Amino acid sequence: MISGAFASLGGISALPKAGTKQTLPANAFTLNYAPHFGMFREHAGSDLVEQLRFMHEAGFMALEDNEMRNRPLQQQKRIAGEMSSLGMSMGVFVAHTIGWSEPNLTADDTAAHKKFLDEIKESVDIAKRVNATWMTVVPGRLHPRLELAYQTANVIEVLKEAAAILEPHGLLMVLEPLNPLRDHPGQFLTKTSQAYEICKAVDSPSCKILYDVYHQQITEGNLIPNIDYAWEEIAYIQVGDNPGRNEPTTGEINYSNVFEFIHSKGYEGIIGMEHGNSMSGKEGEQAVIEAYRTCDPSV
Image (cartoon, rainbow, N blue to C red; front, side):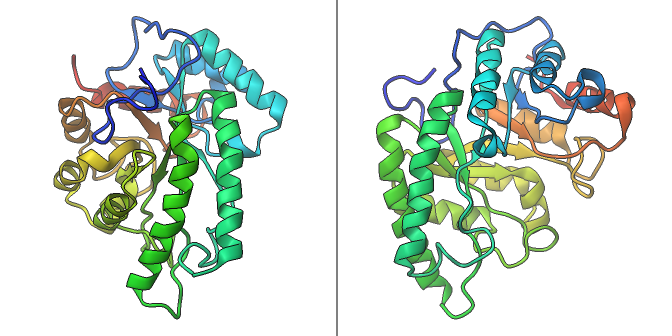
């Protein structure tokens, strides 16, 4: 668990701040996979608390919810209360709205940087409300008229300010490199090495990498060596197979080997299931659960 502001930084065995002591059910997975709302709607219905209960019964001990920031206050509290009762941990939520469609963080734009930092401050309150530790940050689009080195310097400076906001609370922003070839053309941050360089320059325990296996299979491949090299700066992992961005075993990525490697590194953090279901209905939902059973490392 978190001790003081942080515990086991980098390489990441730091666990999220669960509301109660986590008691693992007999069918809990070896790694801490986190489904998202809607993934098991056919089994559990539309109520989010019922979906949480189904996830827990299936052996999942964490939730990932990119939309948590946008949920009504009472809904946030209801979700957090149920997760606390179940002993489930909260994965990432997206920390900001600015910077996705414009070159705001990459530009020397004081007003845009201030808006971003204001949203980071707001996300501190959300994180505390839902017992979260990590929040996703995407620096936004490439600037069409600035050399990449200048853009990198601008991003580093604003992230240093954001890290200073998060550090006193023991919270982490995790920078997510996105693939530019299929899903996110024009984004500034695309590669593991680029995120590693930025985190080293920011030099804060509150600024780390979100390594999304799906994105990096498309962008650069060489998955296990890149994870290994950047390990001390990786604080969170997301998965999805390629092609298709569905559950493991539906594409080309050998997730049995990837998960075994992550397990061998002593990873105790969350692995976000940021993908769709390859099949519809209850059959498709059961296939997701079985895929993770197939790929989950043995103890």
